[in-house]
Image 1 (cartoon, helix red, strand yellow):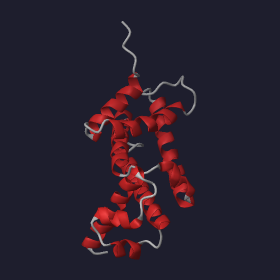
Image 2 (cartoon, helix red, strand yellow; image 1 turned 90 degrees about the vertical axis):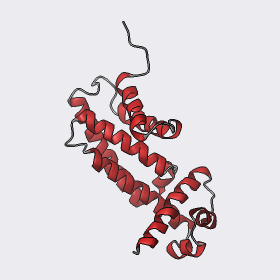
Image 3 (cartoon, helix red, strand yellow; image 1 turned 45 degrees about the horizontal axis):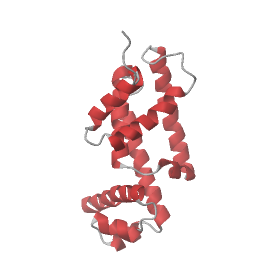
Image 4 (cartoon, one colour; image 1 turned 45 degrees about the vertical axis):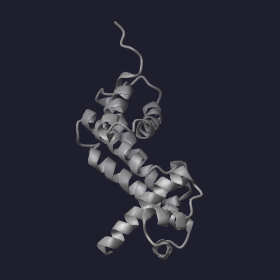
Length: 182
């Protein structure tokens, strides 16, 4: 693909993600206009709005996979990997703010999601085994609490960089929100 075509596609997908997050009924023509490309470009690339949405969701999962890979969940020290993972996912959530529950309709995305969840669950077990996370919590509790923390940080801590927002999330996860006891 030519460089300009690649840039146009990236603009369409990122604009589509943002617009669909704000208005799930956004049209392909509106997305093309906002992305600064001719609507024929979008229609040539995507046969339907559903195809465009599937491409947006696929791009989000590509970014999640890249964030997990960059975090080095299996190799890096657990505290470092946790922060890298949280920072990466906050960045993904800011770039690709689409409603993730709608993605579960896509069979191929469900399988990708399952693999990613398994990777993170294995990391959380490692973090527990190595003593970073408490072992006395109900099974799956950290995996249930962490995603909404990252999502809320991406949305509500917009004045902070992804790294700074990750500091808040990791501190909240590891130390809670209560005041330290004397």
